[in-house]
Image (cartoon, rainbow over all chains, first blue to last red; front, side, top):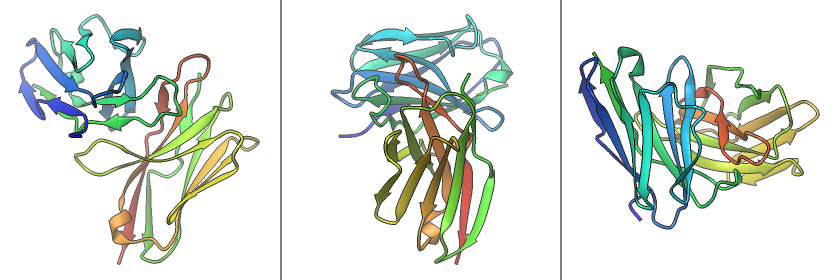
Length: 115
Length: 113
């Protein structure tokens, strides 16, 4: 298996632009997680899906952030409009279930820079 | 809400020594605790999981302990090697019916030859 796939790996954009991050989870995994990592705040959960349904989006910073999972093999995280404080590394992870004793498999991340 | 403290941002040790990393939590006792390794420019990689009714778990040179009285987990790497240099993250369940994780900020371990 190729593992969790994320694209793009790097994104540089200007403030106010729309940014779309993409994720393909491991086949057969039914839970998908979006995280954001910064030096100041560490790794923070933004939203997670179970069987393509959003379960908890309480970590989404504000309305500028939205996430979708139209099918079991694809998810997007969109920021519109982007701001410099959104600069971070965004990780997607998948697991076999929502129960936390299932290990999570992380993608390589997308490094976002908003100028 | 649950808070996690990994009390060393950085830990430097000599090759061959045992590295001990600490993870403390402040609120409810989690049903389980996980440890991950993260290398620069990469996503975290799962290492070990320990449940609340387990005191110790081992995997090769790794050992994790879980003390619910002290609200603490210790992560040991014996016979450390330069290749063990990385950031190590502990993660706890959020409690309740939600199974997702809260991560600590990590401890950066450097093993010098």
